Image (cartoon, rainbow, N blue to C red; front, side):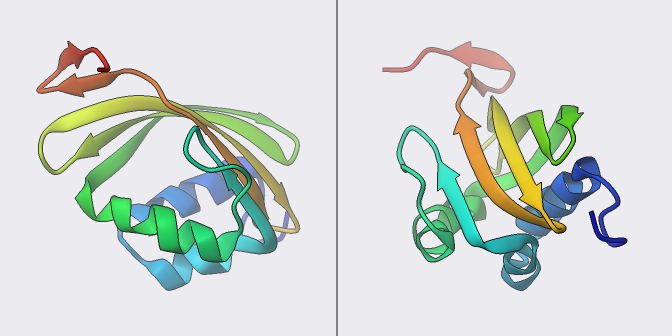
Length: 123
């Protein structure tokens, strides 16, 4: 990893900081040209599609509280609690991959939803 991000954990923390601050340019700078994003809604979409489809959802977010980062070289699993401005929250895990100090892949695995700390089942 380059000096700006000596390890994957530093890069992941920078990504969540930029995303939470709604700093689109800083977020773009952290994503490699070949970046791909996958979730249960998106199948390996590129950077442009990520900013078109996923970025707007961040406006409803308050913050991501990282609970654990499990690094393995240039990859890591990250579990966080996402708190939204309406008081609801969800706990998710994401898989991050990087090369040369930029994120090349994020895969999202959605978890449970909560409203004011109480579990809310899907559907």
